[in-house]
Image (cartoon, rainbow, N blue to C red; front, side, top):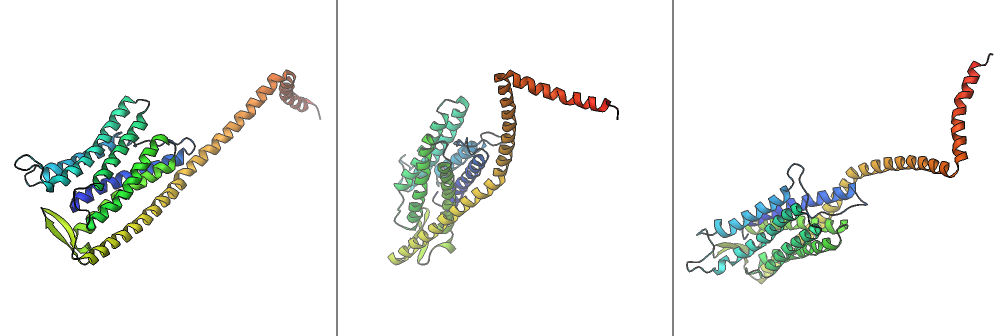
Length: 319
């Protein structure tokens, strides 16, 4: 993960999953505002488990890249079988991928078995994955005192939001705002991962006074002095605040657009249902009134039969 590709590809995965959840949760809430229940994942129309297989495939690719493809010897171990210090980060990144793989795999198993606590357990496994992500980024073996550490520190705030809302989803499955914030936070994770990759491993985006250095086979941004480091961190903080506001605007705007598109369908069907229910209610009232007062029903029937009889009499009368 400590490279341009290692940040952009996982970030793109988070980006797609967050956007997929955001779109589907808003659409589902727009169509069923009164009976909304948030599912932990969404089936694809022609391939039910596409989302979960996508997560599993991405996690396996990440594990393979970290442990077997990326290392020079195509394995992360030293000659004596121990784990060298410069490969600890590979195991940490792989452990995050393993947690998300476990979530997706058991989500499929739980969907096929369908126990009563299916949704609660799936949300719980998602919360475990976010906990693993936060834990390993918080206690990362890589030096987080530099510029990369500032990017990862700000990422942790977003991961905490994903974790809290995942736990809240267990007890509040009907809360739209909980899943809206969680979907937006996953989307934000993806955006920030990609931004981190571009800003740290493209030399033209590295702040003034800082440069890429090769340390144990990994390219790391190092600043020339405390002033350059402080300036670089401040620029990262400002950029994060801009992305925070921008993604909030995007989320609310997407909500308004989708509500306008799918909310009309709900309004049309609800009005039609109300008219049908009103007509059914009037007919039901007529039947009930006839049951309670047979003479009233007889008079109504007599009146309905009397009108055509009088009409025929008028037609047969000579002028």
